[in-house]
Amino acid sequence: MSVRNPYRRAILGALAAAVLAPAFAQDAPVRIGYAISRTGPWSAGAQITQEPNYIMWAEQVNARGGLNVKGKKRKVELVAVDDRSEMETVVRSYEKLMGSDKVDLILPPWGTGANFAVMPLAQKYGYPMLSPTATGRKLLGMKNPYFFALLQQPDRMMDALAEFLAARGAKTAAVVYVDELFGLEQFTGLESSLKQKNIQIVEKKSYPLGVKDLQPVLNDIKSKNPDAFIALSYPPDTFLITGQSRAIGFNPKLFYTAVGAAFPVYRDKFGPVAEGVMGLGTWNPKTSPATKAYFDAHVARWKKEPDRWASAHAWAGLQILEQAVAKAGLDRKALRDAIAGSEFDTIIGKIRFRNGENVSTPGVVSQWQSGEFEVVWPPQNATGPAYYPKPAWK
Image (cartoon, rainbow, N blue to C red; front, top):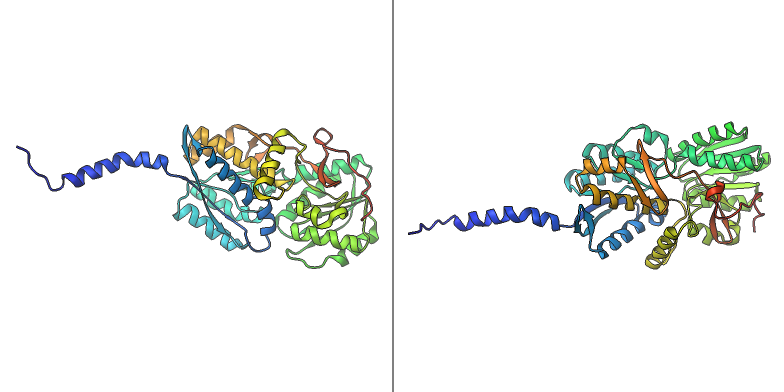
């Protein structure tokens, strides 16, 4: 005779839940969190370079059945926050995503300063962070084992620029730079690189983030007639400097601006005026079949082109994350070790990290020519010959 146990159903239910819980967890979406600028001054860069790539990648992964987590396909769910271009909001958002929301993975914010602010949190909570828009030896000097910089570091980019100038016989340069971590790091690299090539800096000026007028500085530099003008600028400043230089007829042999020069909107805004302007770049649709396929997919999805510098680095970071998760799963320490110790195939070539630095991608100089941001240096990476001296402003 059996004994009726009033708790039998509850006990069996609990046992069933315990057995089913791991299976459910395996089928649950992989939650990937990030804070990004949708409003405020950083949004111009963030909404060209990063978030469109995050969204398109998640869509493509889910269309393939999900993210391969050590042989098990799981859909991706993005958990995104507008950081409003505010450093406090960036930090608070990532603290919540990692500390209380406990997302499975994170994607980085936009810009050197924001990444610098988030790095301690990534290390505290143990989240690998593959950054496509942070550059600087100061970041790498923090020796954060969870931080990986995809962009070429300032000394590598500025070495390439100095090599190009030396090969063209340039003797003098003038430099302006934004007084923020990005500008300071880039200027440190540039000053050293130019000195090694015996190129004299005849003027150097810093300016504050959010500057509205640089014409007096540009007039002063124009009077010194340097061979090269180099602006280590953020997007709003890049547009400002270009417009004001044209207005005063300042047209040196080399005219170089930094973040924003590689944006298609720069070409679209200035039209023929952009011809011959140089800047930070890495790739264009001619670089390889992989970059052409990425470019076409981006245009089809967003009806706009990606930028010719960090957009491809953003996509490469997502490719690396996907390959590492397939190998190591979602154990974040194992994932970090896989990223640190492996070589990855990406649209910008094979990438390997050493102490958090992408040591595979060379420094590059690019230039707007007939509507495309051509790679003009180094010669082995060039997609077209350089215009030097720069053509007159249209």
